[in-house]
Amino acid sequence: MKLLITGGAGFIGSAVVRHAVAQGHSVVNLDALTYAACLDNVAMVANDPRYTFEQADIRDRAALDRIFATHAPDAVMHLAAESHVDRSIDGPGTFIETNVTGTFNMLEAARAYWTRQGKPEAFRFHHISTDEVYGSLPPDPAVKFTEDTAYDPRSPYSASKAGSDHLVRAWHETYGLPVVLSNCSNNYGPYHFPEKLIPVVILNALAGKPIPVYGSGENIRDWLYVEDHAEALLTVVQQGQVGRSYNIGGGNEARNIDLVTRICAILDRQKPWERPYASLISFVEDRPGHDARYAIDASRIRDELGWRPSVTLDEGLQRTVAWYLENTAWWQALQGRAGVGERLGRGG
Image (cartoon, rainbow, N blue to C red; front, side, top):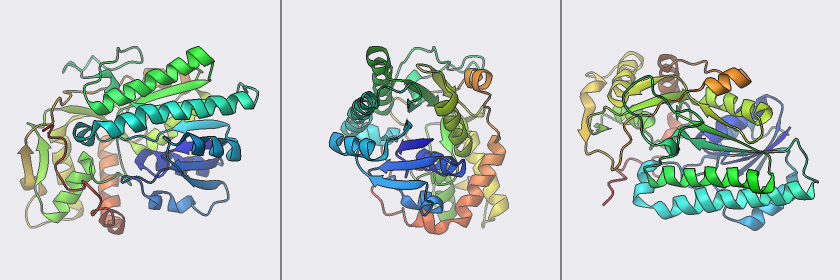
């Protein structure tokens, strides 16, 4: 299968690229190389004859038409997006342009290509989204997001992703474009750009700097190891039912404060410091509109497609900490990028 993967130099996208090539697929990696992208993420497959890189912006329709015509993909995996909630609070316009208008351009370019090809039934447009489109959950552990949960986005980021989800469904219903969708919980693991919670905790701890925890750290997230997610996405694009959506979760709910203390404990074992790393924890002003809890019911993808996560949170955190300790050159090269190490999303 030839896959056109957008955002393939990003965190999740690069994991999909690496897994797809390893499984024998041909991959065209379309990425604009914005601040959070890094071609080092796919260096291990860069010289593989099944891999091609195209630097392009999904807001550039002419470039998209050229790439579809040149590479003739069997399926699209659309991951390119602005994804950091804090940045969306400070600058929502970029999120609307990329996540909404960019997705519109991808849909139109894919539809034009699919039509020129005679509308092959096997073609797929897989739109990758987030559980944040569903809003916030109460603390009751029995209540989780399902594919039928009503959308209730609370941030500019989640609103832009909700809008893109709706566009994808509309292009299926109106034009017959064969689409599948997936909404995932919080990802973590190797190559995670150092502005998100887990890499911030690790890198601040290693630098002996305060570890910021929003509010009282009571917010709950379901954590999904990125390699598990990549496997799930490749399963969905190949086996998912047209027009259907699949929630992908790790089954690993944790309060932010508990997650941070677990990472500190792992660091205490793997790289002991002069005092426990947890002593660096600093509670800071909360993010505006901070959702209380996310939790995924992943029974549909398990029951229909046979996928389930294989990495527990403890195992995944240990692997992640070890990876950052062993790959200092990767994250040190990113420290100077705009916004890294700064407090964003104050909403002022």
